[in-house]
Image 1: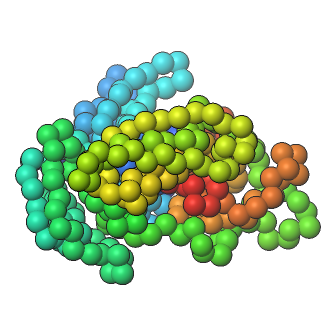
Image 2: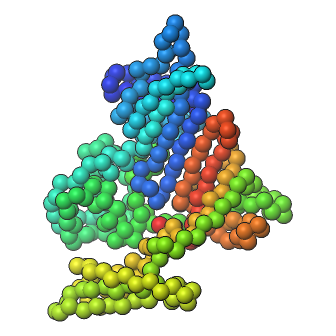
Image 3: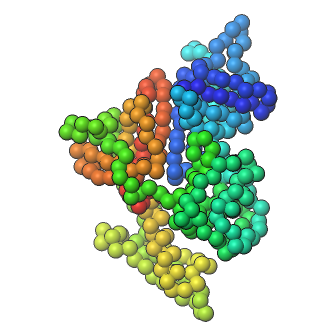
Length: 333
């Protein structure tokens, strides 16, 4: 693995291969993917060889076997030394941070296709590769940009209205597409020896959390007059949940729309309430937006799940590992 650094401060490019540790996290539920690299900084004649070469806002292209793993921008650069040697640590995020960190200019768009909106907003930040599912790429009648919205907020909000999700690929392309919940499992993770082609699990955890769940949502809306829609989730109610939420939504302009908003609100709060995390050998290639069959006898887990995140890390303590986060189908995001 190596890193190509485009230094905006020094107006130079560097290729670095002396990484002692790295962590690269690709996640669909977090807008900007995160990276952390620790680079050796040999001291010669009392001076660090690489000191001053790397700075915040430098562009980092992380490669493995000539394949781009992540292209991002440095948030923080720390230099330090101790009895163990001298190192430089870089913490950063992929290029979608440019859309996250820029407030959008308040305005209203009319009759605009989503793909056009995407290019209009993202192109000024250097994005040039866009992939929008043509089946869902519809004309949006009205798009209101509010004060405080980030560029990413606008794009994700409109994308979700069209039943798509938004993410950035490692090489900087922006994708708007449906999530691959219905795809056949790409991977099998298990320690069951009868599953010959399964990727073996080093560590396994399963977490259930009900703190954000609501089994009942009321939506206050306005048609010719004010109304309130009440919706209960049958599954959560049957499990004994008794938690109500009341919201007012300007989009609830009829009873049917109010019911839709109430149901969506409950479903969105379910996302992330059940999550599996498994650790495997880092040599395996695993991608997000895929499904996997997981079988673990200890926790009685047996089913197909959606991959929402992959973290690839390497250091002296753990060696070379990948940590995979999975969620139930249709509750991933």
